[in-house]
Length: 161
Image (cartoon, rainbow, N blue to C red; front, side):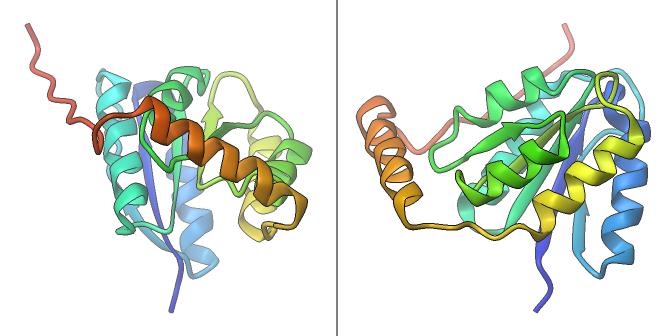
């Protein structure tokens, strides 16, 4: 069974999203694109869609892209069980999977060049979680989530004012 990756973006991440979707499809990875088509939008809506899909198991992993990746990572990490990682180097892409079992990759389309993004993506897709001593840290993160989060998440609904 093919891995299922949901991808979301705002207007700042549209062009990069198109290229990443193409790469994922070439690799035989199932892609659900819930991002915008280039029009100006509010990024939290798209981050929430991807985070909820990963959280529920509808998606195995997710990718979020905006101009910097910062806002996407902030909102995605509000969801219980999400380990969204903003990566700007291939080493970060590798380490966030190996040590943190990252389930959402966040990218900044205006921060990182396309060649480097593809190297990050490759590392994030192919690196396995090491477990072992790193499981202790993930357990502490889970414990902190239980203490801090009093509900199963929230819905973001946005209507232009």
